[in-house]
Figure 1: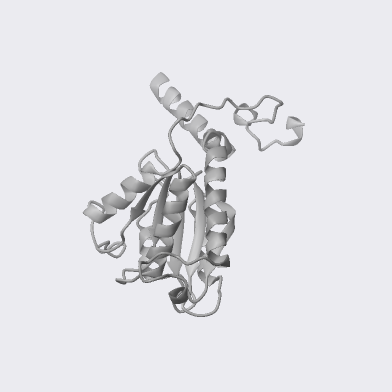
Figure 2: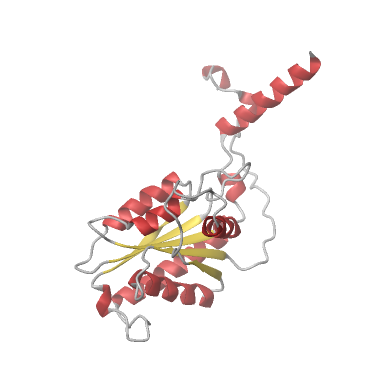
Length: 236
């Protein structure tokens, strides 16, 4: 069959076999980073994110929430800015993420998008988001919408993340939280439980296979060519 594929480098092709890739033992709790998209004093995206963190911890995960207040606009400060470094360190720490944005003018907020724009696809030899799991939520001031969710799902693919199928959209969010900032019982709350449960399951299942799943032919070919070039230069 390889003879019928003259453009393929057979030496770096990973052919499917009956043998399963080795599974390293992972003992720590799933590490989940949560991002939200508003700096308001009573931010419903923050309240929903905090509720999600409580659920994740109940499901056995370790969580950290990034506060976007003080994060500069992309390219308006050096990469060494303390808030930029804090965000990037949390991304590197995490195995999965929860993204939660309000919908503003039919889209995710600039506060949320700025956080994503500060996360590069590569940091040296490390790809901070590749292969990590992702759950999506949005809050709306009016009727239920999925505009921000759809945009974030595109972003998740662009960041090479495994975005889980389930998602949460909370309509009229100002009615769904009590004075203490806790989410009231509702079908919206039940959906958040579903999403967080699914995220933990996907993270547990995928984290032992991530390296295998994101191992690409094109990158193996490029690495092999670079190694060959170095060997040839040394020989000369």
